[in-house]
Image (cartoon, rainbow over the protein chains, first blue to last red):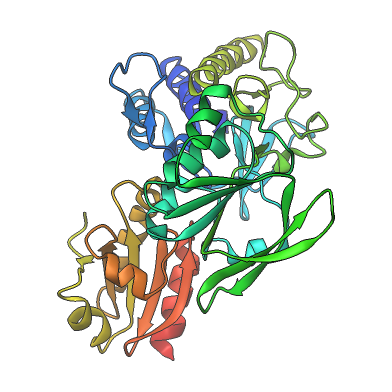
Length: 307
Length: 110
């Protein structure tokens, strides 16, 4: 029986691990499918306090993990695929293996949203990508598309100009919701152009052959669909919380975020806490995730003392 | 890095991968690829287990862009399994040790 199990290993989960380990709770951390979380697919992190020269996302997360391990946290490269919070002790499952615990901290974060096309899933990694920093390298002197209109779309488009010969932003509306500074940076770039009021409705290509070759784009006002040759599509249409495993076990809001009590990380089940992007749809920063991870660990400590 | 994995570049690719008489599992990676680093312990564990039956090879795409292009790599980590000089299996992104060992077992037996 564990005192506390932490699900997720981004800034929230590993900060919980540091605090819980220092409180002698011997935390077990399931790192999940993306150990280190979303920062591991970024490049420079320039707004994490204490690093005036910036730090690489993966390196920052290595340091978080190391710090947690120094204090005795145990981290496993495993993914929790089922939970049972209906009775105590709570049960977590990795495949058929069952883990029992008195308390749980959920910090499974968020992941990139996709369009939901079958062809998109089939071509993921074969011309379709949700990570410009991971895959941009393979699109040197190629013509590519970026889908989205927020800050992350502007950032990805600008970043991809380092490799691609042209970047076209495909956006559903006639204006971006990105901040002015990010828009200007993208719109003033000679390699970047924009297709307004447009959406991708189909992707064509063979993963076993040349990968993605073209997409069908619908002009939304006219409804007209045209085919456009392209070497790559980068998705930047926002993020969704990784909460599928907790459906039916915890209260989630309409967008799928875990609902926590005001000024707390407590969920609808006592002894189960949630921190970071899985419950934060407002700030979504590494430093706020770390802050709420600290809160969760302190709340776990108090909860265990009272039970 | 484990001594059991072999670093391959454009100079020794044919000798080590194409002309190998054993199946060769190739892990395409790069320094700047976070998800690739996560896969490293898996690859090293496989190298330890399968060292006598196959070659486990790592290719840094920064050092060998032509090989990455030739095999249509568009995302890393990418795993290619070669048998008799041909690609017989391919996986992109996070992949479990069990999945890779079952691919290897199948190829070794076949």
